[in-house]
Amino acid sequence: MANKDIKSKKNMFFIIFASLIIISTCFYYVKLRKPDAYVTMDPLTVQFHFTGYDGSGKAEIEILEYPKILSIKNEKDREDIEKILHNPNIEWSKNENLRNGEEIFYYLRYPDTGKYNIKFDREYGSAGTRVQDLIPTK
Image 1 (tube, rainbow, N blue to C red):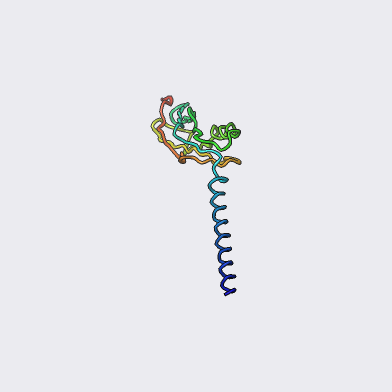
Image 2 (image 1 turned 60 degrees about the horizontal axis):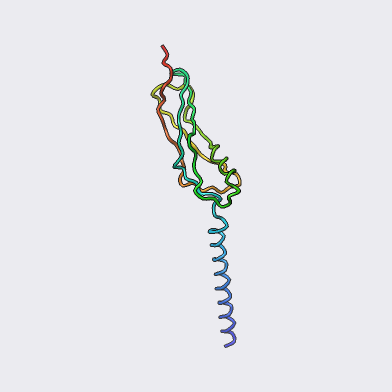
């Protein structure tokens, strides 16, 4: 009889201990690992500028509106996170020796967010446009 009581106490201790581990793990992921900021990419607006001559043109991109912070964990981090959002990494499929009518793609990403865990509502990825307004060559 005493042996059954010891086994049941050990089982009860194990159940309580396992429950505490599960609860603390869930708390960590829900509360402590909460992203420093939630960001929406929707307001992102870009404008292209093409300069030069047809066949040797260049492309530049101007960001008119940047992604917007929807919520933030610590308000004191807002300025630093906005600086990150205002400095995306832009890669081009081609941005030199362009011709009118040529289709080019750009890739806008935020690969390095430093010490901040920023959660974006979507990856912006790539978008394309057609080259225009280059000075015709004769």
